[in-house]
Image (cartoon, rainbow, N blue to C red):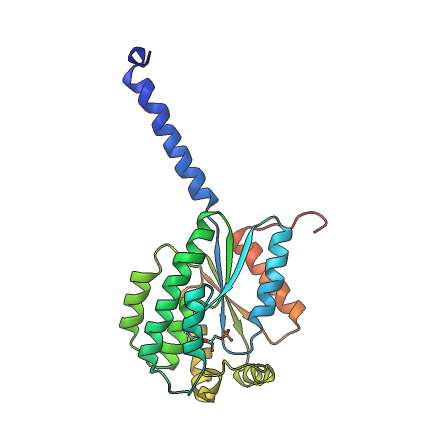
Length: 241
Ligand code: TMP
């Protein structure tokens, strides 16, 4: 039977189908939203609030964090965030951050994006630029090379930089009782350089980044975040949600 079909009749639908399938796949890819900023900015609270609102708007949401987010990366997190302040040099920290990041991308972020889910990550690559690079002094050539080789297609669609005065953030962070204080303990000048670095990242990439003032109430901050997400990624709240 198939011998009666002309080559174009046999080929064209297959090509069209493939093109259509590729379109559907491209359209269905999820979005990566990253949260960045210094210590004590309230990222985890805000991520939970945004996740709830996006779910109400009909999106499938994965919330995650860095360093960490996958079992291997969580083990590396323990090495990075506990112990003596000078346990690692900024160069070594960069390598460990990227080992953790690659595992997180391979096992959590990329599969979720391919399933069409939206990933909200508490920190991502900008944190390495700010903490290890700008504030720590690790070479930007190293960070550029690792970013180019490691991130693959996992590039943030939107980055929300939560900004607040360093003293306020460190005081808030100090109220939490936990062992992960290596970076909190790095001193005021380090944290001031960090704040400047995040602002510079936002200025350099305004199409990807939005700076959110994080000094206000959590509701006010959540509203500013929602406006940025709705604006940049075209999300609409469902009626009655
Ligand atoms: P957090 O969960 O309180 O944000 O803690 C994560 C800590 O790790 C925070 O002090 C920032 C630091 N960090 C880096 O220094 N570089 C990185 O690339 C990432 C992801 C985090």
